[in-house]
Image (tube, rainbow, N blue to C red; front, side):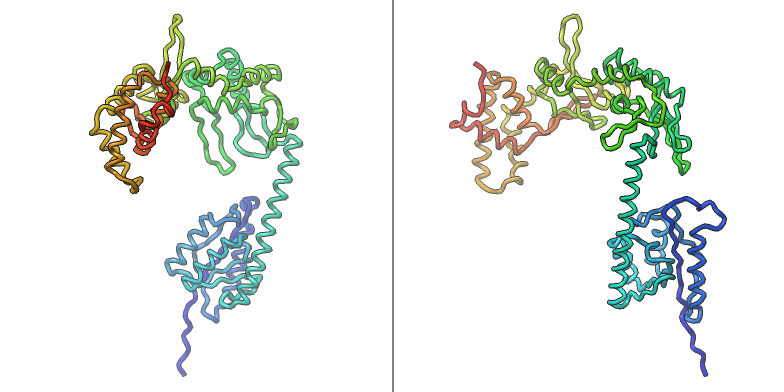
Length: 455
């Protein structure tokens, strides 16, 4: 009789453990899972099952998602036709999320791959097997969510007791045995920041001062051994540091303050003085600044080197007011970091207004803008619309100097989309739709109703 030759069935054993605890042991949970999988494959040797030599093991990875390196390698080998059966100790080793498991089953079905649980019997080719599988997966997902709730409750209880529960350690502290311990050199820098802010009153100036002195944010090493170097101190980091209650010995959880286990770095009276300075409403200060120093191009100016917005600012020297548009990147990181840095507000506004009035007086440019707007609105009479816009711009040119400053600013924002400033000059991008809106306002019947003219 001719012997029956069985086809070799290539089996991959996948193992996973949620935490890294115990993985340093000579024989850990991943080894136990793999041995169980290999023993099951050996029991099916008479069916032609053989184990693949590659190890697919994810240690320290949650089953709540598919972002796992060994699982990605396994899926790549499945797509490459190198795996016939996936063997796991329990189905929740493969995934604890029902939707993720459905995605995996879809990949398995597409490539003709089945999977086996050593401790549970499944046949995913039958409807009953799929139903049983989905029920167990639902319980696995429920278990994961319950575990998450327990962890969140534990974190909340620990924070109420003032314990440090992980994360990026704040400047001034190191983490030892899961507790915050004062770093003397960094603590001195923190106190310096609080004292200098009280003396200067400006986070922007203080950030530049600290950067020039070579100070940087905290450099630290993660639990996995990855080094995180410090970076340049900017205004945003200073505001976050000055508002961090950890420096007065508090532990904060979801907006609630609790006495911490760690030692305070900053005295309470210093903290209170800093908070009183920061308590000044920034919106009120901004409103006063805008009222005293109008900035018609605010919101339109953009740095052509770094792409950041340019914000209005001003200073007084010998009783004279000087206005500027400053690159926000230069404000945060220092003027030396941006080739544009700042432009004089008066000169920029004069040039932009001259360009806009040139457009008002040049029907050819208006016609080009109208042609660009044609794609936005196919209805109506294009030729009639072009005549209306050109006529409206002509009327605007004659009354422009009589408009209130606020009305001039509104029209600029209606017509201009962006003004890009570069060391070599500037460019203006117009709003085609704004041309149409303005033409409606400046029709003969509407003149004097939508446009405010200075008396």
